[in-house]
Amino acid sequence: MKKNNDIVLFKDGKRYDGRKADELRPIVMKTGVLKRASGSAYVEWGKNKVIAGVYGPRQLHPKFMQNPTKAVVRCVYNMAPFSVDDRKKPGPDRRSVEISKICTEALENVVLTEKFPNAVVDVFIEILQADAGTRCVGLTAASLALADAGIPMRDMVAACAAGKVQGEVVLDLMKEEDNFGESDLPLAVTPRKKEIVLLQMDGKLSREEFTKAFNLAVDGAMQVSEMQKKALLESPVEVEK
Ligand code: ADP
Image (cartoon, rainbow, N blue to C red):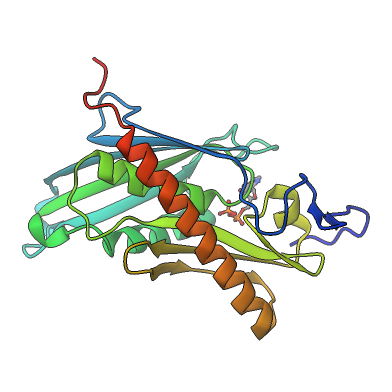
């Protein structure tokens, strides 16, 4: 979080982009967007544009990586070079390796891996345009893509962040708020059982602020979950040839 005392991020109850403290950015979700993937989803969330594609379950090679009791879930998060202001160097870096790991762990919690021994389920999250909160958008899109692929799951995963910006606890930080705010708390929930499958924190929050931000982010994720349900109900029955 950078220091900038000039930028006003919260004034008269309104945020930098005019939202209220507990308001999400506009979100659009679509499934079945890739012809050759087993399942796919596209999510626009504020200025974020993210696509997720699922391949599998299929037999895992090389064989020594197989687990005879369950499928392996592999999630790869990648940011396109043109997704951010300064061209991002293509390929994995520390940040994308970390986000791939936490997304894999979140999705492992919901996929019924025991149904597919020796198999792999590959999940690719491609960030086409980034404006903060991309791990939440990516995970939300990945869960939609898994459902679109018809992969048996215990529950969905819906994600959202909350944080602290110029002393105010707010929902779903955009880039300026993320850059110049005090704290960011992304989390992911399984909506049916309300289990937390991802929880991270950047910056500092007091105990009270943490509780407030946590509850706000869970409420945000539950709203995201309703949008996922709607997107799945509106899914095309057959992918266009
Ligand atoms: P998240 O996107 O999940 O909030 P971060 O907090 O690490 O993850 O990043 C916040 C935002 O910072 C990103 O959404 C993106 O807009 C920007 N960002 C991240 N990595 C880079 C990078 N390598 N170059 C430029 N901007 C970046």
